[in-house]
Image 1 (cartoon, rainbow, N blue to C red):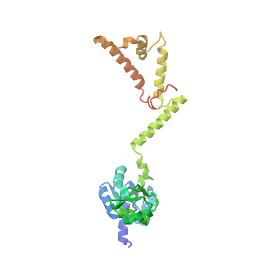
Image 2 (image 1 turned 30 degrees about the vertical axis):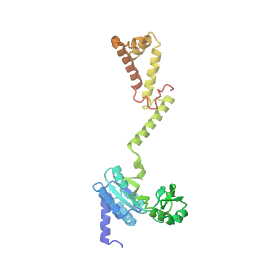
Image 3 (image 1 turned 180 degrees about the vertical axis):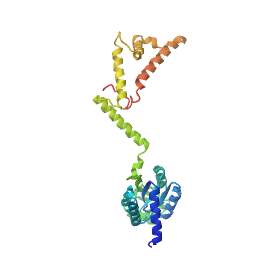
Image 4 (image 1 turned 30 degrees about the horizontal axis):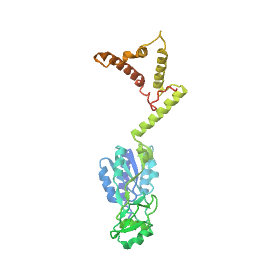
Length: 319
C-alpha cells in the first residue's frame, strides 16, 4: 500500500535531518533479515547510531532534493548506492564499534528452496534419527549410509551445498529432516560513507596493527635501497652511523699513535684480555666491573642506533 503524502513528507524530513546531522553512515544489505531482527539491532545501536530503511525510489529522491538544497554537499554519492534491498545506518561515533554490533546481530535460518547459499554446507556423519524406510531418500542425494540401532546413520561427512549454489528441494528437505539450520543472516555491510568519502566496507579491516606492519615493511625497503645505493636517508642514517663507527673502530684498534674515547675500552681489551676476566675469588670484583664495562660499551655500539636491527638482525656490514 503506497504511503500517504503526509507520511512521505515526514519520511523525507527524517532522512534529510539524518543526512545533515551525521557525517558517517553504513550502506547495509538486508536480504533475509526480518523486521524483529532489525528492531533488535535498533535497540543495540540506541545512542550510537540510527537505522533508516525505505523504498529505493524514495531514498534516491530524498537525496536529490537534499543535494539541490545543499549544492556543495558530497552526499550525492549515496544515490547510486540505493540499489537492491539496502538501508542506511547513520552515526557520528566509532565506525568499528558500530560495525561490531551490526555483524554480531545474526540469526540462524533454515535452507529455503531456491535460496543462494552464502556458505558451504557440510552435514556431519552420525545418526540421523530417520527410520530405515527412508534409505532411498539418502541414496538419491548420493549419501553413504548404514543401518545402526534401528536408524539410518551417515558414514562420512557430506559436502551438501557449495557457497553460491541454489538450494534444491531435496537438499532443503534433508536439512529439515536433520533439523539443521545451516545459514546465518544479518545486515551485510556494503559501503561506508565518512565525511564525503565513499569506500568499501573491507577498508575497515585495516587496523592500526596492519598499518604499522606496512609502514615498517616500507621503511625496511627504503633503508635497504639507501644502503645499497650509498644514498643517505632518514631511514638509513642510523645504519650508516653504526657502520661508520665500526669501520673507524676497526682502523683505530690497529693504530698505536691514535685513539679516541669510545675506542679506548676496545684497545685495552685487545691489549690484555686477561685483565677483563673475573678471577673467581673475592678479589675479582674489579675484573668483573671491567667486563661489565666492555659489555656495556659493546651494547652501546650495537643498540645505540634504534633501527640497526630493522631488517632481521643484519649489521649492514655488506653495504
